[in-house]
Structures are given as C-alpha cells and as structure tokens.
Length: 330
Ligand SMILES: Cc1cc2nc3c(=O)[nH]c(=O)nc-3n(C[C@H](O)[C@H](O)[C@H](O)COP(=O)(O)O)c2cc1C
Image 1 (cartoon, helix red, strand yellow):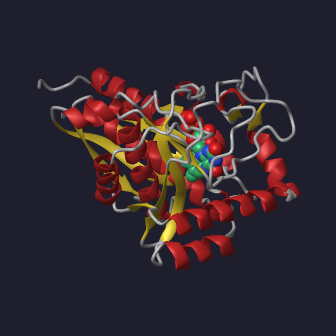
Image 2: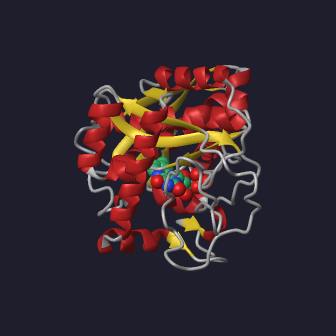
C-alpha cells in the first residue's frame, strides 16, 4: 500500500469519527466529542450529556464512549491502518478518554469488513424476538469477542436466573417510573413522533404496545403516557431471546471503556448474523440491585450490561448528530 497524503489521512480520520457517532449510547445521549489534530483522533467525554441522576458516576457514559472507540478502531482497520490506541492517556485530563492514530498499513480481514458494514445498520431492539433460535456456535463467538476485549459475556442458561433478572428489571423499572428526578431525566431524552432532533430516543424506535414475553423484561417508558411508538407488526415478537450479562473484573473508568468496546464488538458481530440486542439496564443504575446481581448472578464480577439477543425483522430508526457537531478539527 502506498504512503498516504495528509489529505487522505484526514479523510480517513473523519470517516472514523463518522463511524464512532453510530455507536449505541444510553438514551442516545451521544455523550462524546472528537478532536482531530494532525494524524490523531482524541475521544472526549461530554459531561454535559451525562445522566446526572441515573448515571452520576458516568459508568454508562463511559460504556457508550467505549462503544464509539470500538467503531473508530474498526473503521481505521477497515480503511487499511492498524489503530494505535491509548486509553485514558493523561490522568490530568480525565475527559480525554482515548487517543487513536493510524499505525502501520494493513489489509482489512474479512471479519473486520463484516463488522464495519454493520456500524450504521445495527439498531437497538425494544420488544420480544421471533422464536427463531440463536445458534449456540454464534453465542460462543460472542463470548470470545467479549473476552478478546477484556470483558466477559455470559449467556444466562438457568431458567431460575433468567426469572430473577426479569423480576429485578421489572422492579427497577417500577421504582424508577415513580422517581420524579429520574422520570424527568428520561423525558428530557425521549423524543415525540416527528421530532427533528438528532439525539435522544425517537418515538419510531420502539413499538407502541410491545407484547409481553415470558418471562417479561420491562422496557424503559420512553413514551411516558403518550400514545407514541411504531405500529410495527408484533405478532411474531413473542420470545425473550437469549439473556446475557456483560461483566468486568473491576469497576474502574478503564473497565467501563473496556465494557463499551466489548459490547460494541458483540453487537456488530450479532448484527452481521441477523441478530439484534435489547438492553435492560435499569437495575444496574440502582447500586443495591447492581450489588445483588454482582454477588448472586455474576460470580462477583461487575455487571455492566444486561441484554437479550434474538432474531427480529422490524428494527426501528436510528438518529445521530452530524459529524460537524461533534468534531473539532485543527
Ligand atoms: C450503556 C447503555 C445502556 C442502555 N440502556 C438501555 C435500556 O435500558 N433500554 C433501552 O431500550 N436501550 C438502552 N440502551 C440503548 C440506547 O437507547 C440506544 O443505543 C440509543 O437509543 C441509540 O439507538 P441505536 O442503538 O438503535 O442506534 C443502552 C445503551 C447503552 C450504551
């Protein structure tokens, strides 16, 4: 591969930032900003977009940014550069989460191209799944994906454990829906139908009346009493799918970024095989419930995400802020 001009490098970095913006983020807060200086991308946390009530420590913010970092790494590889990444490079600048530079030229392998093709296509699902089974061999590759990033994905096999997770999710949702500061925070990020805003959860991204699965995992109430949501056909959405928990050994800022990168690798891989994920992180925002889950269901590891994986045909719409709004170029 011939050496690239600085214009070509700038274009590669812009494309990588564009890819980053398609990462999942809690309530679609998109809590990031990027700087491009020379051949370096800086990924920064945007604390104005932190959920001060639901996520005071910024754990979900950093998971979201970790997912964005995975997209940057993947884009650079897909565009022919081994990424050189430094996570939390400067203790005096805590908002600087990572720097990434394009390193040695490389040819993207098939797996990289496969995952990169899913960056914009992947969507969060917010209902039941079809009864089509998730192949066991795929689950094993997702487990390997997470472990390759330094986290652990555990598909929950025990019916009893799945029921406990479902019950805790419903209880957490119940408590949160009666908590005024938390409800107001959620309302701030919920978008009415037809909203032109490019952040927050659009009303078109969840069904108006999701069918209950058995066991039932409560959804967040983004419609908060309004008749919002899509009218997509729900007749096949009856299965809970495979319940899985993403955990890390520690619970530091570094671990949260690791969890985000692992999450995104799993999600893109799942998407490449026609699978979607639904998230249920309400209980993880309540310290005592999170600690209970850590002790009882996560072998003392720290739960970072609770999700269901399955096959669906009706994924909703995604919105993102334009790159110009999140990228500062020097
Ligand atoms: C840390 C984290 C927590 C999340 N928790 C939930 C959740 O509890 N319920 C939900 O429906 N979506 C959840 N999501 C998904 C986001 O709402 C979703 O990524 C965002 O709205 C963007 O939509 P997209 O994933 O379809 O692109 C979570 C995402 C992240 C990264």
